[in-house]
Length: 283
Figure 1 (tube, rainbow, N blue to C red):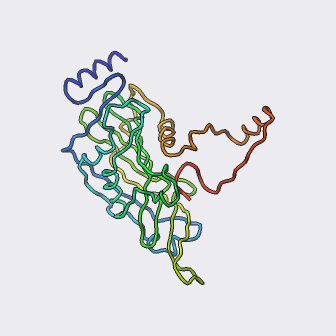
Figure 2: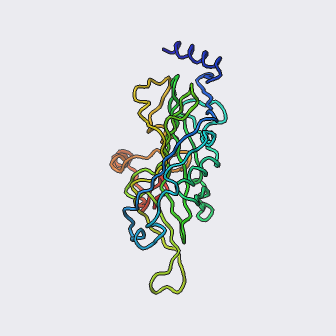
Figure 3: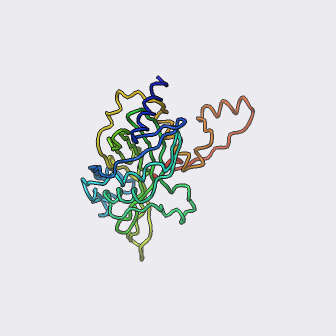
């Protein structure tokens, strides 16, 4: 099968549709193509302090544009500038991300106000080549961004993403940018006056939104695809999270395993309790 794929790759190269060089591939999109993207923001289901009931900007948070047409050129910002191999990560350009997020909310911010907290590592937007065949490319990406609301900020845990490209046609067959489900999947900061306060103050909360996403096409196109090279979705996500958080480069073990290790090695366990995750920007 390897020889067959090499032959097909060389033929495509002659046609100018794709290139395969030493297990690296280059990607492009047809600028004349258009992509219809649907945007969804479901009503906030839960916040610990009932902010979604008390704060109008949060209670009324909905997608700015339920559906919008884009030039495929916008999605070029998600592609690598050079040839890449499976498992390789690269930085996504900011312009395309900004334009797409404006479909969800007119005031997205990609800066994450990181300077306020000294947390530069949470900023950014990166992609990873998960798999490719002669016909399709599967790209997984992760984006950190937030929205400026009236009197505050809305910070999703992350935007997880998936981009599938038809290599021969140089068109997008599936696109998804969404906030994954979780017990809490967003953080909010609200500047307000509560009873007894003489001036506005910042207060924070966390909550759950069942659907916040941009979507185009269907992922089913990959159902019967046999990839030339591939890694699992979990492996790709792991490679991406390590691009953002140094803590994820540690070889963590479960508490049960740590207790077994401490008995075997006769060493103490240093326990730290956290009230938030180390893997995203949720509260």
